[in-house]
Length: 209
Ligand SMILES: C[S@@+](CC[C@H](N)C(=O)[O-])C[C@H]1O[C@@H](n2cnc3c(N)ncnc32)[C@H](O)[C@@H]1O
View 1 (tube, helix red, strand yellow):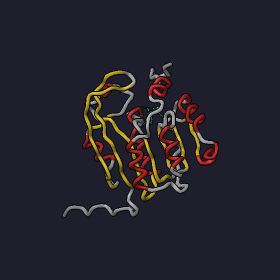
View 2 (cartoon, helix red, strand yellow):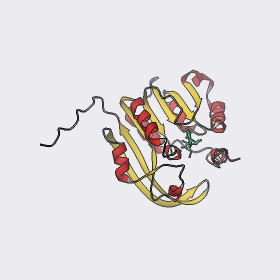
View 3 (tube, protein in one colour):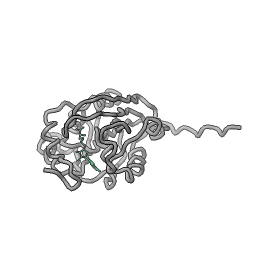
View 4 (tube, protein in one colour):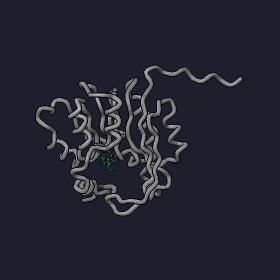
């Protein structure tokens, strides 16, 4: 069944049931090592596959999504022994209060943020990243099939680079390919982003003389 904006997220969760954790999330975990109780945020966690992977790797997890259907699936999958290490929050990106975290993952979710909300959401993600912490997630590019949807956010590469300014880029991979989504065939234009917040704030570059 579709939600208020017409997106059938419950159908998407059923379609993607049994998927593996996102490779970009696993790459972030490799960068950061075992969670050892540190906080990871999974933004737009859907049915929770990546949040559960984080739990299994020893992270405390804040799992955020605006759709209660996915969160219900996640809640049912949380191993009882890990229940104390996870908080499940039903909230939009714009509403969610983001505590300081060493890992923020947003798997194929941030492009569904409305363009008018995205700058503030992105600023809060950057603020919430602890020094040395890693952001892992996708943005969509302007050649994507869905790029004419006014309720979604798309960026050209130079704009993505501006968003990432001041972070240490571990990976910025732009991909264009024809493929499929839950909604059917589509052209994917994506940016895979893995970026680390520097431990020490860099001084601004000297003004040109
Ligand atoms: C394509 S799914 C991705 C789910 C999961 N991260 C994955 O990799 O399969 C996008 C998710 O973002 C959530 N979402 C979309 N817009 C949102 C918003 N404004 N605030 C919070 N969650 C949102 C949807 O409910 C959905 O679960």
